[in-house]
Length: 216
Length: 275
Image 1 (cartoon, one colour):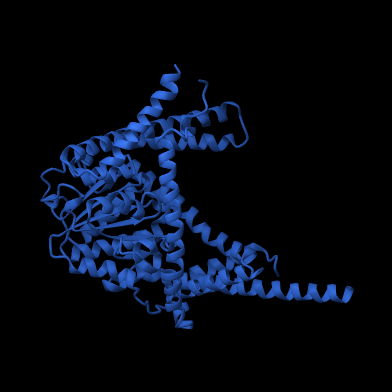
Image 2: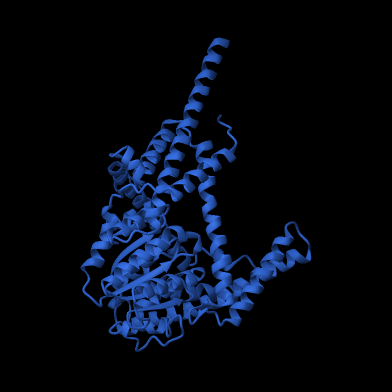
């Protein structure tokens, strides 16, 4: 059974990893056809992953409700919300509107999901302001540099800031285009090299944590 | 003062948001080169060119990306471009459909002939690769269930390689970066991007290297685009509120630092007197 649990997944990973890394550089129609089939499969697997995710979520919250764990009421709300949305979604054939008129599914989306998500995001502005007041202090030279840069960019990104300090717009653009872009690029290169190294480790079976820690 | 009740800060921010929305000032908005990059490229496209737009956001990012999408679609329809739209975010499907349908109706455009909304398909970045291989395999039918093959709007379009210009309005992953890495890099189409304000600094490396030819960042970017197409909407209206809140936060941070330094100095003097 070790072959099925360990060696076979490692073999599949190595063959597909090397195959598709090489495929990128081969523009032959057969190679392109291989990519088309593989991505189609990926989409199908993605669809099943969605079902798996929903099932897992249901299972987790069902256990929470059964054991009456702390905050089980929220799990009940989640159940009601999900089952209700799935029911109206199936009833409306997954359509938010039919011939211009909103379906029940569309109503749930427009008048429940949209305002709820919007509210969550809007609340952030208040918490950011509060957190900035409490923690944005020039405790050291580095913190002072960060503070000054943040103030300039915040001023330069709004019309009132540019009106009050006309130079703030250009300085803010310079900070974003030169300082920020170069540092971000350095991080991006570092992360990309790390991803390449990790990919090689996975392809050649050095990194095996994705296989899980089950009994062999 | 350093431990001010946070409800006072909430009140200040609330007022700074509300009052400018009720009494707009309308300060002039300076157009940045990154927003002009997207505008100029769309402006240079001949009629019936194919603009591919991926509205990769959900209602949480609606305040910033909704006005961007509206402004871009208005511009594209005004230029008589063929507009192909889709989303990589399942929770954004309804919103994307509403946006496309609303602007198309406003501009008198016909579904299937002038525009199409393909909807959402599972697979995240695999969808991008699949679109690059074959659009009809990825989306055999549009969001309304009509077969995509034979739609006049997709005439001559087999895959992403046949797209004239692509714009991803992304609120995270998958978004602009994914479209570049899995789409533009392999299938070689010209690309621009739009994103939330907090994401914009992260996309500047792509912009500076020419990997994307323009970037609409946050509400400010949307307001700039609305000014460029001369159709001022929600983004321009929201800029006064954003101006006031930014200045309020800056003032709060300055006050906090003044108190912090005065307390630190007092503590230092106290310790010197003690020793």
